[in-house]
Length: 578
Image 1: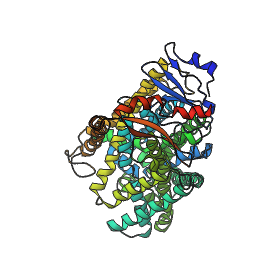
Image 2: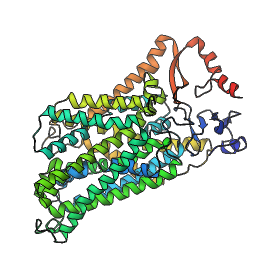
Image 3: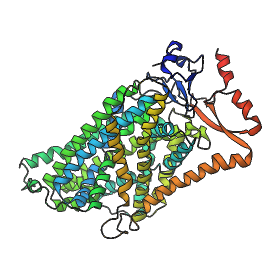
């Protein structure tokens, strides 16, 4: 929706000032100012309402250089393919170990669904405010926490780039491949296969967005088929029609027998369940590549998470019908392989193991599709050095710099740490800062509402119920607090073999280092150097638009400000257009 001059005054508060002459349809920004808030309104090319945001936010690309290739099916399968990762083929083992009983394990999955639906509602409201910005949390944190200026963009940018690896899924791919060959690999064999898989998966994302999306759709269908190859045989066994399973209902009698009452185990199981649903946000990362994004994402995100939750429940019932509790607990990373081996024999199980390989590989693919958009959007904020590298879509119309960054970081994480405890520590480190920023983002929704109310801006296309926002906030606070609960067996009884809180402390340490860098970069150095930071809008030959932060000497600041608008565009540009 674009606002004409006749509509502007009715949308602003009495004390707000609106700069004259703006026209979203012409790509000319309109400003909404009331002394405390400086907002700019710009129209994107995806058919959504105008994006009205703080002036420090990355400029809206009226024509997205990445294109508008994400249709209904692609948006659906970006979520489905990321939701169905490696967890459902291995996670039932660790979940049963933590909870102790089949009944409680089955109850946890619907809880995860409710939290995910609440999360979709929160993300949808944010996306309704900024529908022509991709990157999800990148944008929402930037807009919710506007002061100190650039702090949250800097903090989120640094931790996102540093922790932008998909190494854990890559190692799982290698494990399943070697499972098919009956070969016990050395550490370096696993690393080598993992690097090869990572490189092969990166290539289609780099060469073509259309092809990578089609590949995602194909892999999504393959994942559903894989799930059905667990569910259907499992329910056939549950009906008593397979001789390999003499008592398929054994696990369902006294289903809550053995339930553990240890708070650490129960809470960590819930943390794992929440993370297993993490893919429901993926389509929000490509919002500016979707025509009519709010309507499309609202339908596809909810459909995807409900559909996958049903598959999760049915697959777990199938596992419990075919395998004993002892078999599940002992299956670790290959629960699906043990399941197929019991039903169809060793040779068939090895053949079917190709399906979890495809599933894990496609999860990496869709994760990278979404994550590259996040990193590119961070680059468009201007807070990273060399913004052109992060923003460019040269040469194939894809986010080249972001793809290179993810490959390099993932390569280092695969090669540098030894397999085992050190690698587990790095994977755990990846989760905690994400939980921290997600909780802040949810809290920030109330700040965005307040600012828009102050300017009397129109209601968004979608608005979440406040009770749902509070529920999602509570879930994220849970993710922050529970990792500090000591495990049974001592404080060193963690998955990485030393102090259980080390990964959480390291995660907070990264945020603290970001804060130190921010103070040095934005406060101390400008004061010592006699300059101020100013943002300027730059355009690249491929059509990309970005902010770039530049140094303006103190004695030249007034002159510079007089020649640029609040968002950093040269006023002469608009004079030429007029």
